[in-house]
Image 1: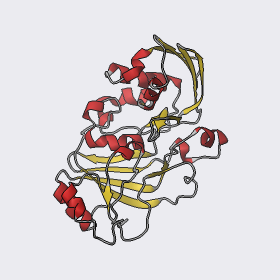
Image 2 (image 1 turned 180 degrees about the vertical axis):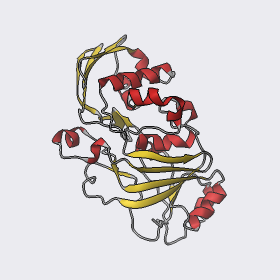
Image 3 (image 1 turned 90 degrees about the horizontal axis):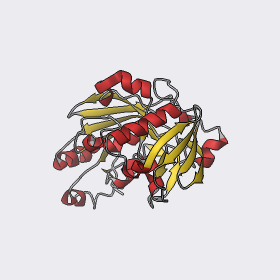
Image 4 (image 1 turned 45 degrees about the vertical axis):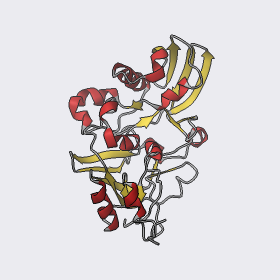
Length: 286
């Protein structure tokens, strides 16, 4: 894909807060994922090339402080229970149904057809494990109000709170990335550079300080939207728009600008304001 365009681009859920710059010669889609309303009609393109200003060095879903620019890729590799819109409102993703029993008790049901890129089914055990890992890492936020999660069956859980969640606290359910417990424990430290994906993309290769290559996850559970339950309950369906996302790590903004101008990359995640002004009068940039 040879794009030349200046715009704010939604590359994935977290990239809505990141300024991305690109230029394009033809009218092509630059979003890596689509919303539910367009997911079934968007044709997957071959490749997009993106520059990242730094290398986080890890794709461990529970190592928040070390993600760096990799945080922009995490929501493409890992699925979450919920997503937030631009106004901070919560919209359920993996959660099929939920009920507030009382101020201290919530019931959650997840979909029964969620699989990771190795074909492992995601169950209540994996959700409980993932949330506990987040808490143990010290990044729980308001989830520290959670006392424990009671497993009912493979897809149903009862959340017991120490103190009541308020409406804002529920938005913290959009924080934890959910992974398969067995895969995470078996991989050990290697999971940080060879993760098993639950989201729309999987990590194909990672060269520290140089590049990150993502490819579409053929086992992504939202590839099949035939179930009415899925489209009814979802706000963002992260349908793949590209077969491959190549991320080049370019720390110098001037170098990124040159790569953008030469057509070597399609999107730059960081440019200084003077560099951006160089593209303003370019008629091929919108």
